[in-house]
Image 1 (spheres, rainbow, N blue to C red):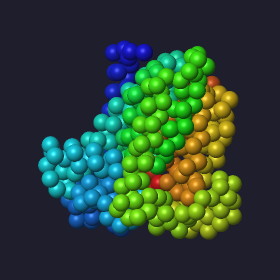
Image 2: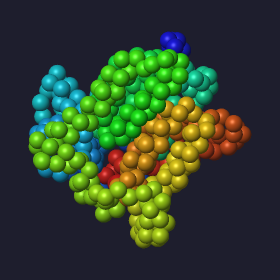
Image 3: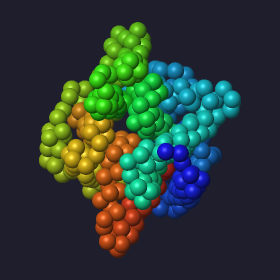
Image 4: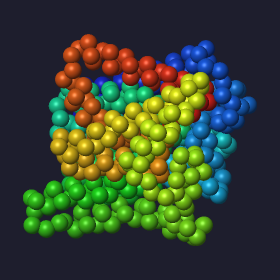
Length: 384
């Protein structure tokens, strides 16, 4: 469907309020948490000079900027190439140097999220009413880790590619759907979850036809080509086409380069991770419990999705949730799930049926968690 002016106004206004809110958190955060100096974007000196810019590049943001600045170095292949490439290309028009690269990355992130937000709303309105569609978007904005959409991270670009790929698939514009899916697969590893989801969508379409269209078949070939191109690059560069997975253990002791099942990961958290968290150190407690709670909630949503959502959405949600857990950890899971839009449809549908008081309390809780999580991240503490 074509968006009305009122729809665009809602999307843009909501986005701007969210973005302004994040900047307000940046102003307040220094009064609440001391600066943690180890993983600041641009290093301590750059951060102190301009926290308005460098706060958004903490942790993984530094890796993305480094790749955009000097290309891939050993042990950086875990970070897929499209986001740093887009950052590098935009910097041609902005200027050279790390600072301009950071500006470029933030433009890519925020513009991608706005484009993705528009695509999400259009996609939702094909199946749902205005109320659920708006509520889904609002709940995504107030999710405790939504600030990563506005940071130097690849989630926003991946989000835009995913929702628009689904939108074009729903409209049977398979060439566009396949192209965006292929780009998604070189943005994040979870992009491979989109491929079987598109195949499933095509199978649904086949029920209305005697045979699959050549456009659909070609789109699947294009969608698969993205990850294989990156794997071929890795093979030429390192001799290992799965280098991005085999070095995952360097990003945390919990991670493993051998596949671990979801029940095993839950076992680790219940009996090893949570009992051994340093409960005197609040950021570690918050991160560990957020990981576990998000894992529980999204496991339930994954199961429910096969009964409540379109099967292609359920396939994407399931694989998109399970792929990060195969490394044996829920680390970063609160960030990874923000691109799983089908889960937020389920949350919105459930939320819409609650009592008004419950809605207010749950919204305040989400906003409080967003405020705390974003504050800690901006001050250099690991969240997700």
